[in-house]
Length: 529
Image 1: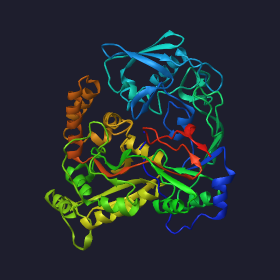
Image 2: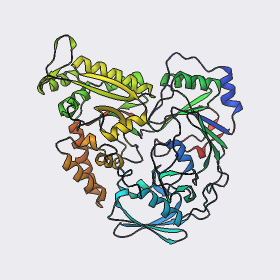
Image 3: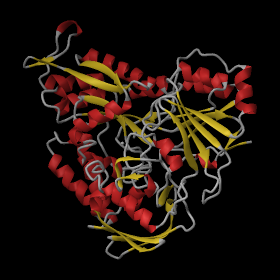
Image 4: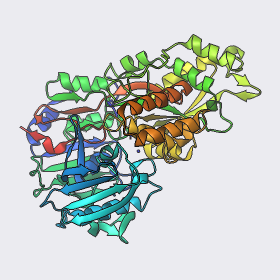
C-alpha cells in the first residue's frame, strides 16, 4: 500500500550536463526509455503488494480506468448497475488477448477476481474485497459481479493498479495467485521480457495491444541509488528519465532538476497535487508517549512546514495543514489550524505533565522519558532531511526522537504490525481518496494500529462503515466530515506537504502526462520526436 509526490535528489553542487549527456539524451535514444528506480521491480504478481506499481501498470489492466472526468471504460467497454446497487454487469472488450496468447474473456475475469478473493485477509484494506459475494459468467464477454450491499466506491477500487487487474490464468499456481504465479502475462501495452534482480528489468512493446502498439518499443527500469549516482547516470546517458517511485522515494533533488532544465536539454514536468506526505503516529503503542494526544499535537505544532516546503522542495511541494489536499473529494472541511508554533507545543507538553529538564535534556513524566523512534525511507533523501529537521525541533522542546532509516518494504511491515512510534507515509492519492486512505483506518494491514488507540475509535469505525455503503450524497459528505474531524483532532496523521509527481526527461520526449494516481505513468502515450 503507496504513498508520491515530487522527486528530489542529490547533493546540490553536481555540475551541468556534459556534451555526452546532451548527445545521449537527444540523439542516441529514439525508441528506448530507461528510467531510474531506487528499488527492484520485485514480485510482479499483480494480486500481491511487493511489486513496483509503475512496472505493474505497464503490464496489467483493470476493467475500468479512473480519469479526471470520472470512471471510463478500459477492459470493460460498458457496464450496468442494478437498481439496488449490488450487481455490476460488465460488457467486456472483445478481441483482447493476454501476452501469452490466451483470450481475455468473462471466464478469465471470474478466475482472477476469485483468485484475489481467495486471499481475503491480505486484501482486507480494500473494502470492496469484503463486499464481493459472487462472480458469474453470463456469456463469453459478459460478467456479473454481485456485492453483499451497495458500495459506492466499487468502480474506483476496481480501477486501482492492484489487486483487481488481470493476469493470464495459465500463470496461476494451483488454480490461484496467492501462493505465487508462474509467469507475468497481462493485457497491457508492455510485456515483461527480462529481469535481473536488483539490477534491471526490461519491458517490450505489446505489438498486439488492443489500443494500438506503443511508439516507445522498449522500457528499462534500472536500479540505482538515489542521489549523485542517479544524477551521474543521467549525465552519462545511462538513463534518460527520472520520476518519483510508488513510495515517494527520491531520485535527484529539486536543485539538480532545475539545473538540468536550465541546460535546455531536459524538461521537468509536474502533476497537480496528488497526495499528502505525513507522519503517522501509533496511538495504540503500549508504553510509548505517542499514545497521548498532547504529545502528538506538540509534534504537529513543532514542524516548520514552510521551511520544509521552501528549503527542501523549493516550493514544488506545498504546505499541508490537513490530511487531504483541497482538491480531494469531500475534503473541504473546517478543521482546527495547527500552524508552526513551538510555544504552543511547549504549553501542551507542560499541561500534560511532561516536566522539562535543564540543559535541553529530554522531558520526563512519572520517570518515563519523552522519547520515540521516527522511521523514514532510507532511499529518500528528502525524508531523511525532514526527519533531521523534526528531530532538532523536538530536541528544543525536550522531545527525544531517534531516527531510523529502513527500506520502504520494512516500513510498510512496521505499519502493518504496529512496531513503530512514528513513521513517514503518504495518503493513497487523488484517484483513491478520501475513501481508500480512510478505509485503511480499519485495516490490520494498514492503519488499524494508528487509529485503534484513540478514544473515539469505535465511533470512527462505525462512521467509516456507514459512509462506504451510503447511497445519499449529503449523508456521505456529513460522515466524511465527521471522520476527518476525529482523526484531525486526535493528531494521529500529522500532515507535512502536498506532493506532486515529477518527471525529468529529455526535451525530445513527447506525450509526458499523468494518470489520476501517483503510482504509474502512461508510458504508452510517450514517444521520442
